[in-house]
Image (tube, rainbow, N blue to C red; front, top):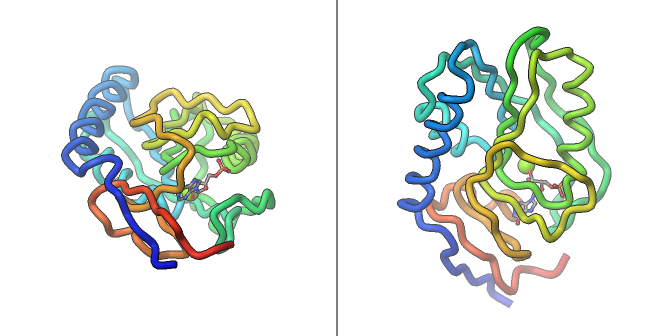
Length: 177
Ligand code: IMP
Ligand code: MG
C-alpha cells in the first residue's frame, strides 16, 4: 500500500512553539554556557531552530543513539553510536530530542549522562507520546503532546525518509514492519 501523509502540526505552529520554548529555557537558565545535546538524527531541525530561539549562551553537541533499526517500533536494544567529544562535568545540560515514545532510549541515555556529572540534566522534546510510555521519563519542556500515531517530518523519519518535511505529518498505511 502507498504511504499517505496527513499534516498534524504545521510549520507555523511548530515555529511559534519553538519560540515559546526558547523563551522559557532562556528564563530558566539565565547563566550560560548551557549545553544543548542533540540526539541524532531526528532532533537536527528542532535543535537548529531552538538554539536560535534561546538567548542564553549555548554550546551545541550531538550524540547518536540507535534503538529503532528500520521499523516503526523500538527494537528495545539501545546503543551509543556517537559519543560526546567534550566533558560536560559541572555544566547545565539539556538533552534535545525529537520525540519520546516508550522512553527506553532516553532512560538509557540519561543514565549514561548522569555518570558524566553535569551540574543539571534536563530534557526538551519537540513531541511527546505519553500513552506509549514504558519507562518514567519526565521531560522538563515538551513542544506538543501527540496521539499514538507514527509521525514523520521536521527531522523525524521512517526508514530515513521524510526528515526534510516542514510539517509534522502522520504516516498512514506505511509498509508493514
Ligand atoms: P523511545 O525509546 O521508544 O522513546 O523512542 C524514541 C525514538 O524513537 C525517538 O527519538 C525517535 O527517533 C523514534 N520514534 C519514536 N516514535 C516515532 C515516530 O512516531 N516517528 C518517528 N520516529 C519515532
Ligand atoms: Mg531519536
